[in-house]
Structure formats: C-alpha cells, structure tokens
Length: 266
Image (cartoon, rainbow, N blue to C red; front, side, top):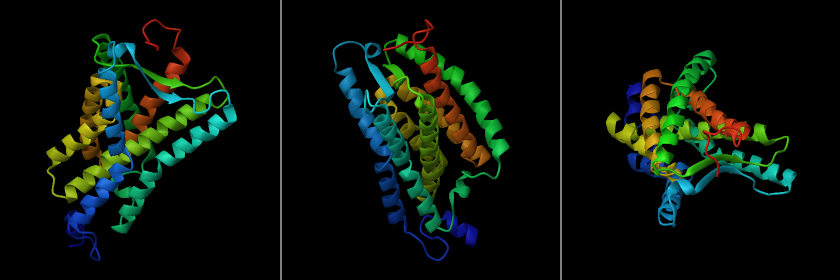
C-alpha cells in the first residue's frame, strides 16, 4: 500500500500534497527555471526572424563575458550565474524530500558511478557527432543562427568556467526536464506518451533562440533522453552525456574557432 500511495497523484505517505498543489508546484519550478527560459527563447526567436537578414547571419552567444576588461569581476559574475542557476535543482530536492523521497528516486546519486559514466559517454559519442552534422545542415539551409558556444576572454579561468557551465546546464536540465517533470506529470495522471512529448517540447522550447534547427534537434534529443531515462531509471547517465556534449561544444569551440574551416564563427 505504501508503494501504491506514492504513485497516486492525490496521496503520499502520511497524507501529502493534493493534485492541485502538485500542479501548482510544477508550474512554479518551471516558472523559476526552464519554463521561463522557453518563453525568453521564443521572444528571442521572434526578434531574430523579424530582423533584416537571414538567421545564419545572426549569432547566438552562450557563454559571454559579464564584465569585459575586468577579469576578476567577470569570474565572480560567472560563478554567481552558475551557482544561482542550480537553485531550482535544490528546490526540486526539497520537494522530493517533502514526499519522503530524495534525488535518488530519479537516479541522481553516486550509487552507480561506473554505470552512469559508461552509458553517458556512449550516448554522448552517438548524439555528439549527429548533433554537429544536424547543426551545420540547419545553419546551411538558413534555419539556424550561428551558435557561438563561448566568447570569454583568454584568461586562466576560461576553461574551468566553461566546464562548470556545461555541468550546470546538464544537472539543471536533466534533473528538472527528465527526473522531476516526468515524475510529476505521471502523478498528475498524464500518460507516458503525453509526458514524453511535453518534456521533449519543453527541451526544444528553451533552445529556440538558436533557431528552428535548435528547437527540432533538441526535441529529438529530448525524446531519446526520455526513452533512455525510462529504460534505465536514472538521470545520472544523461547528466554525464549532457555534460560531455556541452564540454565538447564549449571547450572545442574555444580551441578550434578560427582554426578550422568547417566551424562557423560570428
């Protein structure tokens, strides 16, 4: 009876939140994090498509300097941005604790590190090569902006900050879009198919600032990640995969931009 209670939207062990409260808290979590990013990306996309010139002639910069010419202040802003972006993850951990669980219930823990690392690296290898090809094709067809993964000054903390930024992105997105959202939608009575579509479209929405290609590519990635999460029951491997993908994009761009012909730059 205890296990069944956790799976029903209106009842938790000890008498927990109602379906209405769960719906409200889910909207609040999204409103403080990736849901708000989705709205921001949509506004940015509208601005891009209504601006004279093609999408590929415009640039979307991901990791930019926050205080040009002032490296120590810039570092402080970078670290503050990374830390503050993870507050919604702490909120999710609190909400799970309230229902008698923890982040372990979604597979975000250290119980299976080698499983997470091996599976994550494999996923990153497959999606990384496909993703680069899709981005180049979408940009070539005029469906995507030129993505500039980093525009930080050439200082000693540049690459450590890029790595931290990549890990932050991965933790935030996979914990909320996969683990938390799929769990909550299931508790709210959504079918697995409906929840998968909602999660994937949300992932695509906050990448819309990159263009149509960024949206479609991330929707496809969201579907794959959601299916793998349901198969493995862990977000850990997907956090690893996402971290490696973003590290490759951020650090790779920093090392290769202007040195190879196939990599577009702003």
